[in-house]
Length: 214
Image 1 (cartoon, helix red, strand yellow):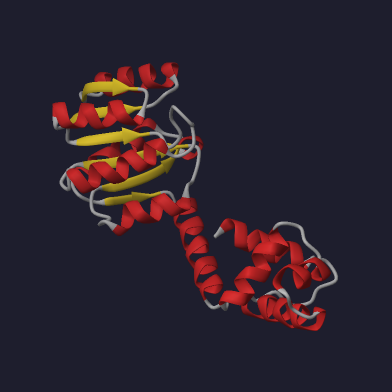
Image 2 (cartoon, rainbow, N blue to C red):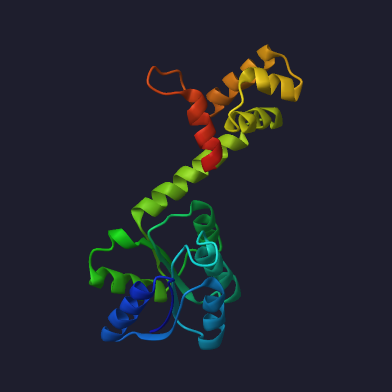
C-alpha cells in the first residue's frame, strides 16, 4: 500500500510515517498543506491519502477541500480524513461524490493501531469507514438544512436579522413591516424549526443557532 500523508503538525506527521513504515506500508510523501497534497498525489499516484482537515494557510478546511478535489480528479484513490474536527458541509460533499474508498475518523477516538491500519486496508479496498460521531453530525446538519429550506424568503430574512441580534421592532423597521407581521413570521419560524414553547429554552436563541449551523 502506497500512502500520501497531509498533516501540518510535524510531530504527528513524522509519527504517522514511522508507524506506517513499521507496519509494512510505504509512505511515498508526507506534506503539510493542501496544495502540496494535490501535487504529491499527482506525482506519486498513491493508493490512499491520509488527510487532516485544517491546514495552512487559514487552518479551516483546506485539507478537506483538497480531499474533495482528489476524489474528483482521481476517482479510484482512497481518502481517509483523519482529524479532530468534523466539518459537516464538506464531509457531505466528499461522500456525495461516492462513498466507496472514503473514510473519516476522529483522532481522539482511534484507540488502537490495529483499528487504524484495518481502516486503511478497508478504504484501499473500496469500503467506507466513518466514525459514528461523524455520521451523527452529518445527518444532523442535513436535517437542519431541510428544516431551513421550508422557510419562506421573508422568514429567512427575519431569521437572518434575528441572527444579527436585532429586536422585532428593529426588524419591522428595516423590512418595512408592522410589528405584528414580524411576530407572525417569528412564530412561523419557530413552528417550522420544531421549536416548541419551553420554560428552559430560549427559542429565539435556538432558532439563530439552527440558522448559523446550517
